[in-house]
Image 1 (cartoon, helix red, strand yellow):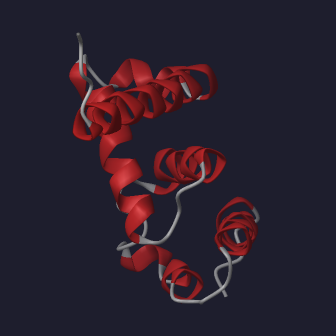
Image 2 (cartoon, helix red, strand yellow; image 1 turned 180 degrees about the horizontal axis):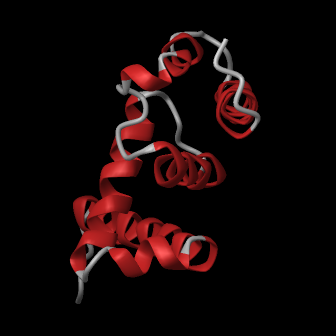
Length: 117
C-alpha cells in the first residue's frame, strides 16, 4: 500500500500553487517571463510566495497580486527605499484583503499616476 506523508502532501500542494502562479505570470507578463531563463521563472515565483507570506499574505489571489507588484515595482519592492510607502501599509494590522487593496491603491497613486508625495 502506498502511503503519502503530510510533508509529501505539503510539497505537492506547494508545487501546485506555484505552478498555478507561474501560469498566471506567463499569461499576464509574457515578456517579463521570457526575460527569465528556465528555472529562474519558478524561482521568482517561489521567492515571491515566501516574501508575501512573511507579510501575512496567504490567499492565492493575493499571492498573484504580490507577484504582479514584484514584476512592476521590483522583486524586493517591500524593502526598496524608493517604495518607502509600502512599509507603512505592510506594518498595518489590517486584514489580508485590506492590506493588499491598500498596496494596489498606493501603487496606482505613487507609480502609475506619478504622485510621489
